[in-house]
Image (cartoon, rainbow, N blue to C red; front, side, top):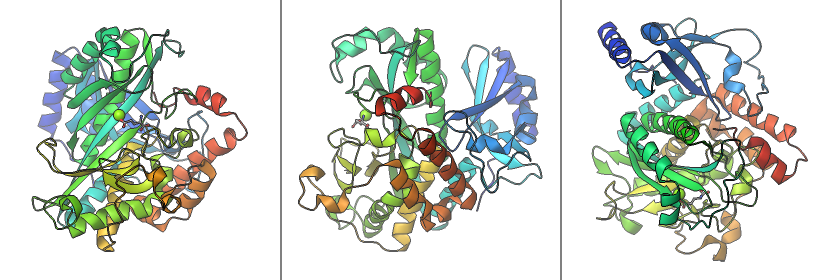
Length: 449
Ligand code: GLU
Ligand code: MG
């Protein structure tokens, strides 16, 4: 169940190559996320763009199961032999810095078929499955990160004020450069702001087709890293950079419409939710315990999911409820993108293509199964008399066991990706067994940078 990426004609590839060369680009880098959410890359001199797109650059199959500590989590289908082709999606290529261009890649087999380990291809297939049912999905993402010194320590102490102007003035050179760099790369940031946690910022990205959204988030991380380094800092995308600090989320927004009619507005349900929209919400929440390993499955993810941290640590939904895993945003004049749901529980250790496929796949499953809309939680879920019913287990062994047993995850991702994700996360589980939370936070602080 994979659909090929859009091809580019010979003329388009030639024109793109020439325009990049004219702009002084020397190196063209193609990237792909592994199953642990780490971005891996291969580069070519820009004159080889067409070949990077058409035949691809070679990569060992183990690329998809590299781990956050660079261990390799071999699976029943990934060993030391074989070769994959990383093929550049030329439609997304753009210059991102002096002399440097970037584009996302897909994993192909040498025979020209797309690999069953290609997460980006799997997300495309999930979009095609939605479209086959007459549904169009849009997704947006909010990417949080924490600035550190260039050597990875906390920045010198200032009196941080959450969402404060003081944070902006203190870091204005970085923020202006970041805004300019994102704009020049054609990346549609909706907001750039200081977050709650000390030295924490957020870039929110405009809604787009899910693969475009995921590509954009990958590029945003690269650019945030480049700009941070230009200002003698580094950026951590760890779900919890310091064990006693604030967590970084990578929230995913989803809207669905059928022939231009939204599923989350204009209906008879609460806040205008339609029956299909309610079933989609039911599907996402019903599958949350078994898919949590795809959203927040790293060795440090559970440490972020504390009540009161606005990380959505309860398997429930509610209008503008920031403690619910699924925050509902109604269609109002104050919400120009229309009604949508925000899965807050996702963190930046997730492979965003896999997380997006899981979110969309579970919504579709809810629609197909005509699941009911669960009861809305209108206040803090921790204070609800039924809280025990939607409290989630977060610890890595438990969520990996649930993921392992999930037939829905296999249906959404295919057996090879399912097995691969479990292998890299089990590697983390065993590697860090018995290590203190502080030492884990330190060890993985820049794993996803
Ligand atoms: N930093 C919070 C998290 O871990 C989210 C804060 C917010 O934007 O609501 O997801
Ligand atoms: Mg935020």
